[in-house]
Length: 515
Image 1 (cartoon, rainbow, N blue to C red):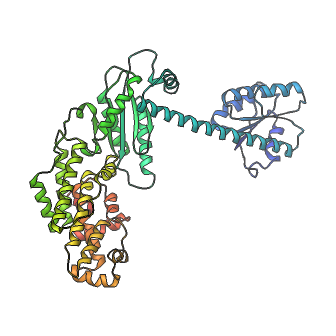
Image 2: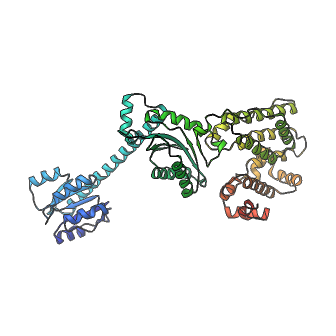
Image 3: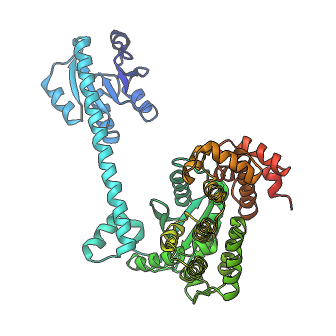
C-alpha cells in the first residue's frame, strides 16, 4: 500500500519519513508533500491508499484536504497528525471522513499502529467493493438473460430493466434494437484461449458499435442499438470485418430481425437462435441474417440408391480415407443447396448411417450394435465442436471397423484392428503397448506380425498415417499449421514440418500452396 505524508514543516516530513521503516512494514512511501495543494495535485496520479496530514498549513489546511479527498476518493484512508489536542478539531475531522486523529507527540509505535488499522480498514473496503461488484455484475447478467430469453413480463421487471440498461429504454427519439449471437474461433487451442478470444471480441464490439453484451460459455449475446428505424447492415459488416482483421480470427454472427423496442427483444433473440443453427451449413466466418433463411423449406432428407451403392462399395473396400473424402463431398453438396436447413441435413446424414447399418447387418447375417447416436454428435456440431462431415465420418467409420473386424478370419485380423485403432487415435501419443493392449496381444508379437503384414515397423507406420492425415487436412481446410500438427499428434511444429517435408518433399505451407 502507498502512504503519502503531507506537512509544510520539513522537519516533520523528514522525521516521519525516516523514523519508521515503511518498506519493512509493507508500505511504499511516496515523496512527502509540502502543502495540501501539492498533495491534491498529485493524488490523482500517485493514488495513495493512506494519507497522513497536518491540520494547520499555509493555504489549504489538512481538514479541507480531507474533505476533498473524502468527496472524490472515498476509499482513501486519512490520518490527521497535529499539535492541537482539541476536541473541536477531532469532531470536525470525523465529519470530514478522517480515519484517525493523532498528536504530533505520538511515538513511532502509536503512529504505525494507526497506519496498520487504516490498512485493515482499506482492505476491508476493497473486499466489500469487490463483493458488491461481483454481485452487481451477476445481477446485470441475469437481467440480460431474462430480457432476451423471457421477455418483459410485468411492470416490476420493466422498471428493473430500465435501471440496469437505461440505454435500451430512451425517453425520446427513434431507436431500433437487434440481437446478435457471435462465435469467435481460430486462435490456437490452448487452455483459456477460447475465453480470451471471446473477451477480446466483446471489447472490440462494444468499442465499435452501440450495444449491450453478455459473454456466455461458447458465444457472445449482443443487443445492438440503431439510432433509426432501420438496421445499418453495412456498419455491422464493417465492424465484424475489423474484428476479424485485428484479432486474426473467424467470427460467425447470427442476426435476428430489427425490433422497435426492448419489449420485442425476445422475438429478435429467438430468430437469431434459428439463424445460429445454420452455422454448420453456412460456415464459421460468415454473417447470417434470419431474414435470409426464414423461407427455406429444407433440402433432401433421404439419400439416393446411387449414394447408398457408392457408400457400400467404399465400406467393402475398407479404406477409411476414401470414406472420409466421400463424407466431405456428400455433406458439401447438401450444404450448397439453397433450401437446406440444419434439420434436413441431420435427416439426410442420419438416413445414410441407417442405410449403412442395415447393409452391414445383411452382410454379416447378424445383429450389429447400434451406430453412434447422431443426435449426440449433432449436439456437439451445433456449438462448433465438430464439422458435419466429421460427424458423419465418425458414425460410418465405426461401422467400417465392425465390418473389417467381423469379416477378418485370418491370423492377421488383429493387425487390421490395430491399424484401425491407430487411425482413430492419430492425435494422441499412442504407444505400441497401448495398441497391443487394445487388441489383447503381446507387444513384441504384435510388432513382429505388424512388420510382416504392413512392410513397416510400428513407428514408421504411425508416422506415415499421420503425414497422410495431415495432407488431407491441408487439402480440405484452412486450419493453421499448428492446428494441423496438433490434430495428428505433434506439439512441436518444427519437428512436424521436418517430418512432413521428408514425407512429401514440401513444407506444410508449400504443400497447401502447391496449386
